[in-house]
Length: 201
Image (cartoon, rainbow, N blue to C red; front, side, top):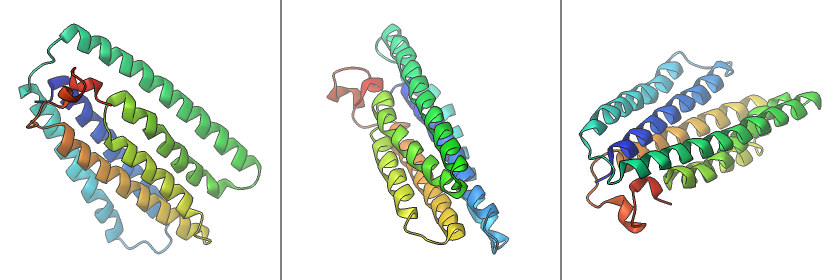
């Protein structure tokens, strides 16, 4: 069984992924001159579904067993929170620096590309911090989307393709997290490391 705290934390992470996916989707559609009216509804369906799914998993986590060692789990949670803050601090600093550099050199439309690249890179250490291997998949695909978008010469088309691709990656990742890490597992995921599920690599 996964533990109560692990499932709740993973579900909250999936909720955040869902909302950021919505941000990328709607930001790209807003800047799409020929966007049909149904595009907004189509972009809204995944985030509504994932939000409801995440909420149900958060509520359902109360029925899961607690960690074997609550004190150790609490210390582990604090450590993860600290490391998460460090990773996000570096991420925001890099985004700010990239935005300033690209804006001052006359390349403002490359800022979303840089943001997607940095966001992708920040998932790689988070996979280790949270013990969610799916975040490695998320990070690699975000980086790939960022780099691949540079092959699109039309800037409007590039931003649309990048935004929709990032949204898809984040939504799929959120779904995988909810299915894989927030329900009752057949095997205790902590067995591979001999410890609490929070400590999965």
